[in-house]
Amino acid sequence: MLITTIAALALQSASLPSCAELEYEGTHQDCVLVTANGHTATFTFEPGEWGESGILIVTNAEGDCLWTDEFETESFFLPRLEDLDGNGFEDILVPLITGNVNTEMLLIMGGEGGYALASREISGHTFEPVVPGLFVVQARSSAIEHYASFYAWDGATLDLEATVSITFDSDESASCTLATGAVGRGEDFYCAAVMNESDSTE
Image (cartoon, rainbow, N blue to C red; front, side):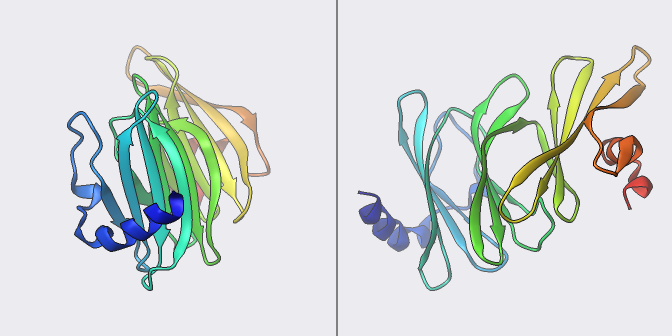
């Protein structure tokens, strides 16, 4: 069935709207994302067991299949592209579950050799690159406390390098402390990356 779906999507992807231009209106609409190097990620949706069932198929400019995946989503967000690890190839983020603030993602990393699965359960409200090979995922645990987790990606393995805790005080100031990890970069590096002190991350 998946092979048949791939063939059908190859024919219809050119007519589908961009996921980046759509707004969620109660159900997901079939859509595409096109990477800077001409790869097309096509998403199709239908009713699923606990939300919507989705199929992702990535093809190159010649129509060759580079990656396929199936997922269930009940998030109201749409898939998007982001070069999280700074290697010049866009990664694919597929929202799966959205709570009050945080969203659990299917994360597929792009690289020179193609695509690789990084995680099916990484969760947060903000996903951003930091330096090459390192990105940060910020998540809210309460109204006054957030966590920022730093992940290293080497092209094949996703490693949690460090986590910092950000606590907001009553006067709207915030403090940042290292919760886990260090790996030679130190607390100042990680806190600067999430407290807009970019000079310390260079």
